[in-house]
Amino acid sequence: MSTTSTLRILVAGGGIAGNAVALQLIRAGIATTVVERAATPRPGGQAVDLRTASREVAERMGLMPGVRKLQLDERGWLYVTEQGKQYAELPVHAFDGNGPAAEIEISRGDLNQVLLDLIAETDGPLDYRYGDWIERLDQDARGVDVTFASGGTERFDLVIAADGVHSATRRMVFGPEEEFATHLGGYMAFFSMPTPADAKEGWLTGCNIPGAMFAIRPDRDPATSKAILTVRRDYDPVLHRDPAAQRQFIRDTYAGAGWKASSILEAMDDTPDFYFDQLARIDVADLSKGRVTLLGDAGYCGSPLSGMGTAMAVVGAYLLAGEIAATPHDLTGAQARYQERLIPFLEGAKELPGGGIKYMLPTNKFGVAMGRFSMRMVTSKVMLPLTKKMFEPKTKDYSLPNY
Image 1 (cartoon, rainbow, N blue to C red):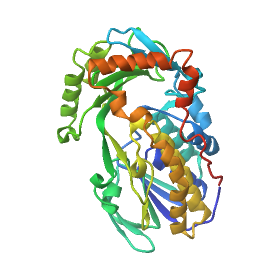
Image 2 (image 1 turned 180 degrees about the horizontal axis):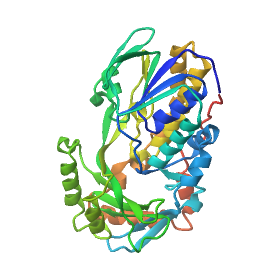
Image 3 (image 1 turned 90 degrees about the horizontal axis):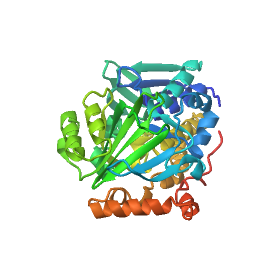
Image 4 (image 1 turned 30 degrees about the horizontal axis):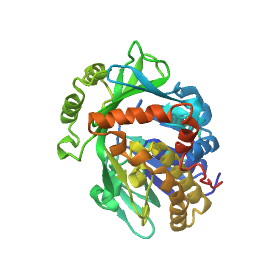
């Protein structure tokens, strides 16, 4: 994909969505500026997977050699009681790599580094700026005047907002977050911790308690793992951007929960990468407003419950860059086609499994016991073929355009 263009495009956000679209744009010869608020690339993070259309995009973009080098040793999911007794397992091979754990799993930070490495290898018109962000946008029919936090104003033909679920760019142009966000009934936290001595290599192990679950997922480094915590709770403004309140909430929820809860809580105090946020869905009816377009979580976040955030980001980036490169003289048409082609994928990707958090996290002991019984049933040899069908990706029939 290459084109001759005088376009100048600004990408807000140096995460997976922003870097994926930037890579494809500079490959097409389109001058691209990326601004990332963080001072450096953010390492680590939760594991993400590539399957169906996102796997195909990764192949087409040349990501897979780098992904293969950094992918996690993911063998499946184990389920245990508060006493640590295993009662069910979902191995990767039983679902052809398309079950709860996919064949290709990689940490968010590692996938982002694969993209950054390819960007560095590409001889394209790129201006990459860490520690900077958009302060103001003023657009007209022909372009956008952007004022940066670092000072100065520059003009761009298009601004792509890839700055996450709490996108500041979206707020400036489309309106406040409350207009687009739906709280899904809970919160999620994850952070690094030492790998327990009795951890089963390559397996994510999880435990449900009333109203919450906690799990430990292996990292690429065998010495460390990720603690993953999900709690059912209505939206609480006290928890908004207050790490001390968030940590206390987690302590109160998991104190005395059994299994590895005490080890997780102990690790939380010293972890270098504590993450906490509400489980929220983002829906924006029109992904473009004038010369500003939303990409990834900024425009269509299904929440971590969907398991498809990275898939939506890379597929969206591929489509947006492809449409821009196809008609650089007609950005309005490119933006419209991007949304038109993406919507069928989003309809399947945003769907939450099994009724969402209410089904996943029952609030009493009876509900937890029934959930364990159900899990034992669906993972039995007799039921496994039907269970495999239940876990088939909703996006498996999506037809990806070729650029």
